[in-house]
Length: 117
Image 1 (spheres, rainbow, N blue to C red):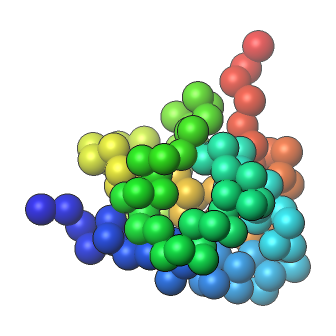
Image 2 (image 1 turned 30 degrees about the vertical axis):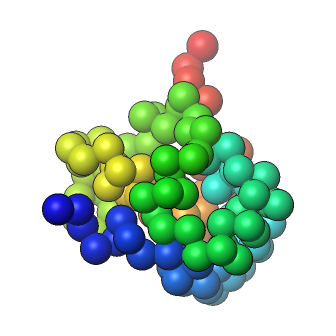
């Protein structure tokens, strides 16, 4: 049995992401940049998922996750992202983490990780 968040619509959580980043002086465009980097969704695809009430489970099942997602480390709500066992929960925590970083003032360039050369 999966966690309740798996069957929650992304559209139900998205306004909280927007409020969080805007409260800290960031923009919806910057939020979309980091979501796009992580999931591969462009603005039109993201809008479609929000309009149709896609669950987190389906949202991430259809996503073209960046190969650099595993570079996302640190804690969200006291849970270390890199230690989350369940693959879907890990993706959700990674999304939470990049939104947190953006809201905490990290530049989009820093949130969008690139592996060390």
